[in-house]
Image (tube, rainbow, N blue to C red; front, top):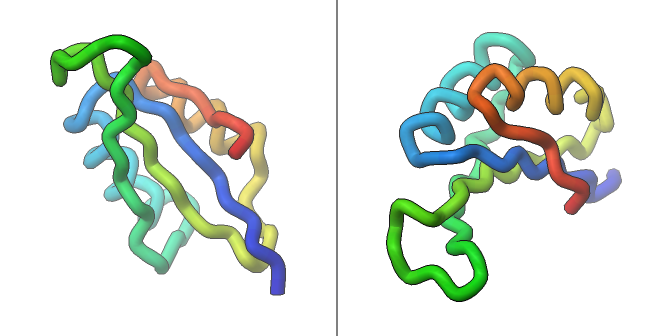
Length: 81
């Protein structure tokens, strides 16, 4: 069993929540991804935060390119963890 993780970076909380819901529908993700607020360096304002959706892929069945395109639908991207 591997500990593969994918990190999707989204511009706001609403987008992150929508992505979490859509992951199950589109990719069959069963385990609830973790949503984390990532404040930009030197910024205290919540408006200047990115939101990360962290999902485990122990079976290695999720394609990184497909996840990147998927996150792009919400103006986000896939980051290497």
